[in-house]
Length: 144
Image (cartoon, rainbow, N blue to C red; front, side, top):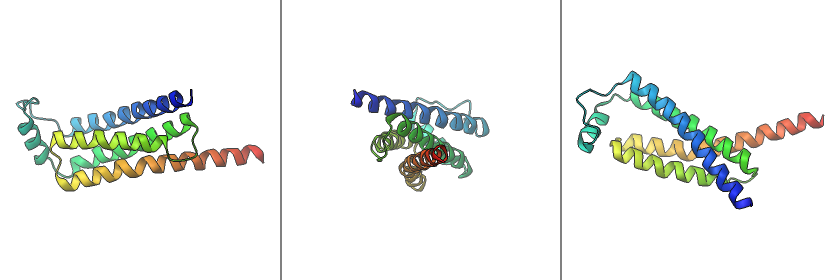
């Protein structure tokens, strides 16, 4: 039963992270719309479009990844009720694999790929630690 609870926590954290990331990416698509003539089924054309974007277009994507990974890890840690960075580490690994695939398919420049991977690795840990800090603070206030 514990395994199902932890798997469910990781799935829920992934859903939360994905929804948040998609909201930020939707806003980014609104700010930097793709040309109507872009054939999204042509990988080379999509990668050329991605490479032509200004660096400011990546800021909102990375902000969404940071917030999504942070909140996804908070959700995972809260539902799994873990004090160790285990279920959230699984979430971080899944987010990193999905991020690698996303960045590879879109043709992110190498420096932005590295930045994205750092965000997807660090922010789940920060989310986990923040949740533990918040829960300890809440318990201390209830005891006082």
